[in-house]
Length: 275
Image 1 (cartoon, helix red, strand yellow):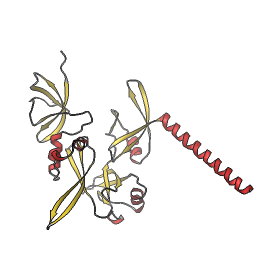
Image 2 (cartoon, one colour; image 1 turned 90 degrees about the vertical axis):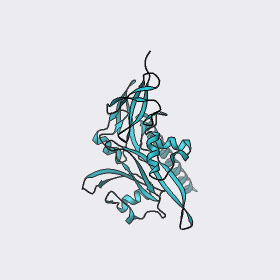
Image 3 (tube, one colour; image 1 turned 180 degrees about the vertical axis):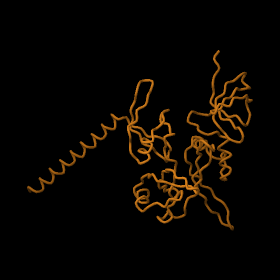
Image 4 (cartoon, one colour; image 1 turned 180 degrees about the horizontal axis):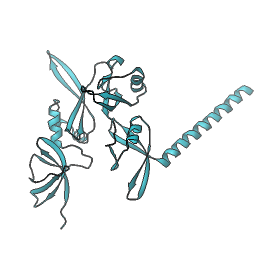
């Protein structure tokens, strides 16, 4: 009888990581982590957790530990919010507290993120009381220009910018205005280490998508090669795809609508002139 392989999360040396597990007898599991560590673990261990659903990116235990550090109780959150957090999605958390005899509100955006070298972390951003001003719009030692600021705040665009660390290391980041926070929010940019449907992006593809373009990317599938027009949503941290055929059809429909609309307008104008 073929043994079933289950996807799991395990906590080794204080870090949660992904792996797979095969049951020996229903109580003991042979576990293999994604970095090829192999060991046995007992069912019910607080260091072994089975994946709840395919979209889950982080262990529940990992999320609990991280959120506690931000004074948010994971167990008190509704189940749909818990599921969103362990998928790595943003959650705007509002709570009240007492300060100098007065009730005050705290609003913050929390999101689980993953770094290939340091493991998971919780990103926390506090809402500003007033909308951010141009002179306050800074991130990673980068002062946003007036043009960048207006594109984000007025036009709702995502922009690509170059940030730097205290040691002088430079890197590309994505930024957009988040009205719920009255502030600029930054996310990691795509790189040549980013995978799209199991295929690594080229540097040219990553750069183009970071700039808001939609390059055509061809991937291999079981049904043969498929080509998509690819963009990226930093808010959701996921790719947005369109088939090339559908995109061309949409552009043709828009073009025809503009042409027809223009003809109608000219006809009305001519009718008005002949009266």
